[in-house]
Amino acid sequence: MRRPNASLSDAQRVLARISARVCMALSVAILVVAGARAYVVYPSVEPGYRIQLPRDEGSHPLFKTEWWYVTGWVEDASGAPLGFQLTFFRSRTGIDDDNPSRFALRQALFAHLAISDPKRGSLLHHEKSARPGFGLAEAAEGSLDVFIDDWQLRRDGDGYVAVAKAADLQLDLKLQPKAPPLLQGEQGFSQKGPSPSSASYYYSLPQLAVTGSIGIDGKDQSVRGVAWFDHEWSGAIVDERAQGWDWVGLNLDDGGALMMFQMRGTQDSELWAAAKWRAAGSSEGVSYKPEAVAWKPVRYWRSSRTGVRYPVEWQVTVGDRVITLKPLMDDQENDARGSTGTIYWEGAVRAFEGDKPIGRGYLELTGYAGKMRL
Image (cartoon, rainbow, N blue to C red; front, side, top):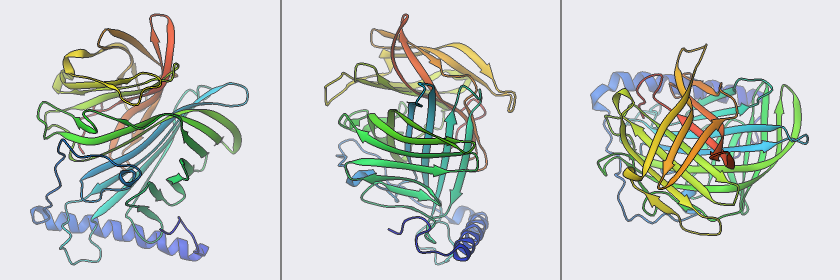
């Protein structure tokens, strides 16, 4: 695959970007005109599929929705904490492959970049969107290699590289696995609602050792820490009754890992929930069904920009374990209406059992600004 912007002059890059943006706009117009005639049957997610890595790290373009997601806690040389997020989304549109138009938008890519810096007190974030092609955006099959312009997430030997640059921040990190992959749900089949038809293929790479640099306002700083990687793909991931979801991935201080989520129905009622806890040194995890998982909001924060109210502190229960989640800072709202059309809260959190700190991770809160649609 061509690396982003490789072998292109500045003029060629400008023309390619213009062409890509024009084609994307024309493709949207085609979608509107095509209306109900643009119909695609997406593959279903079925139990029993065997996830194989690194093959399944790559794109699965026949499925409707897919994302690659890395978040983490790092510290600079002074020990000051920072949180980071780099997420790539792939969406297969409703235009069938039989459509003869050269401008038909069959796939779209989006990306979100964010830094949580308590010194600033608010989330620093950026977003991108593009159609694959023109050497400017692609999601490869067979191995992890996804990029939009100079934002990229890819495999590098036995580890990974995450790179992104924006006007006021940049991220250049190496991610090294220190634990085996964690297959979520039942061997990677992750049910997302009462019906098994709402499900995804889903695995995680917790306890990734992070080294590299993060630059804020032109000032680079060396950092190191721990990250969490998620990869998920599906044809129908969300139950129609779902308003949104709450999710957390925790790298535990003892080397273990915990992922848990709940799908919320209307009026924040619980529609479905699940969790997986893996002890340090184990290759497998223990799965928890909805009746063994509970989410209880403890404290709320309201955004002064959007007016959306989020439960930023939680008491969560997994089996007989009760954990409190507290944010690194309250304002970790990501307004991504310019790309994926969403407003959500995605932020660094600390985890406690009683007063004892047990880990750190990331909390995702969606559907509080309106019903989530994928």
